[in-house]
Length: 318
Ligand SMILES: Cc1cc2nc3c(=O)[nH]c(=O)nc-3n(C[C@H](O)[C@H](O)[C@H](O)COP(=O)(O)OP(=O)(O)OC[C@H]3O[C@@H](n4cnc5c(N)ncnc54)[C@H](O)[C@@H]3O)c2cc1C
Image (cartoon, rainbow, N blue to C red; front, side, top):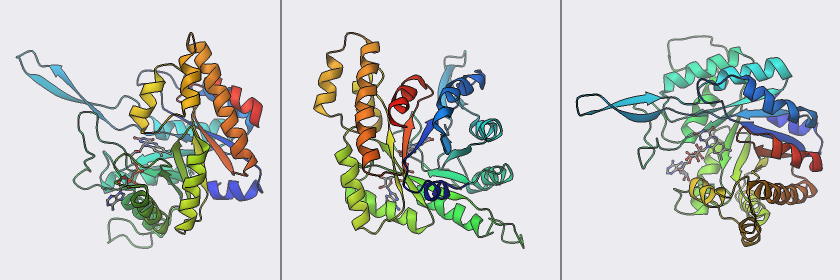
C-alpha cells in the first residue's frame, strides 16, 4: 500500500514508522531482523531502508603509488526491502539516489522494485562522495532529486528511456522526497530550498520526510512556510534520539542542524553514554508527545540500525 493510503486509512491517528540502514558488507541480514523484531508491536505501516552509494579508498599499490578502489560498504537495500515485505508483510520503502546512478541504472532499479511489488520509493539526490566537496552527478545521471522524481513519474505514465518501446507497463510508485526544516546545507536560504521542494511536489512527489530536528518549533515553522507556499502534501517529521556524547558535535556537523541549549546542558552533565541515552530518549519522547498532540499523521524515527532506544520511545507514545 502507498504511504498516502496508509495515512488516509489511519483517519487522523498518529502512526509509527522508522528507517534502517543495511548492515556493513559481510554482516548477516539477521542483525536487521533482530532490530526490527522488537518494533513490530507498534504496527509500523512502512519501514524505510537507506541507500549507500559507493566510496573511494586509496590503497598502496606496492610501487610507491596509491591505487583507487571503489567500495560499497552497505549494499543490499533492495534485498532488505524484499525480505521485509516477505517476512513482516509491511511496506518497505527503498531510498534511491541520483548519486552513482545513470538514468539507465535508475530505470533498471525501478523495474526491479516494481517486479518485487514495492509501491513506495524515497527519491533523493545523495551527498557528495566523501573525498569530494561538491555533489557530482554521473555523466548520464541526475543533478537534483527533482530530476529523479520526474523520471519516476514518467515511468508511472509508462514512459521508458527507450523511445522505441511501445505499450509499456506503467509503474505505480508513490514518491517521497526529503526536506530540511533548518535548510539544506547547500541552499542559500530556506526560501530557496522550499522553492525547489515545491518543484519536487509539482513533479509528482506525494509526501515529504524531514531531516531530523530537535526543536519542534523549527518543524512547525517549516510546515507553516511550506503551506503558505502552496505545498499541501503530508510532511512527516524525522526524529532521532541522541545516543552518545560524541553526537553532540557529530550531528550538527553531519546533518547541519542545531541542538537546543537545554538538551546540550543535560547531555554535558551525563557521566556516561548510558545516561546520555536516557536523556536522548526523554527528549525525543517530549518531542513525540507534542507532535502527536498536534495531529501529525506519522512520526518517523531514524534508528541508525539500533532499536533499543526507539522501542523505549515507542513504548511511551504508541
Ligand atoms: C528523509 C531523508 C532520507 C535520506 N536518506 C538518504 C539515503 O538513504 N542515502 C543517502 O545517501 N542520503 C540520504 N539522505 C541525505 C540526502 O541525500 C542529502 O541531504 C542530499 O545532500 C540532498 O538530497 P535531496 O534529495 O534533499 O536533494 P535536492 O532536493 O536535489 O536538493 C539538494 C540541494 O540543491 C538545491 N536545489 C534543488 N534543485 C535545484 C536546482 N534546480 N537548482 C539549484 N539548486 C537546487 C536544494 O535547495 C538543496 O540545497 C536523506 C535525507 C533525508 C531528508
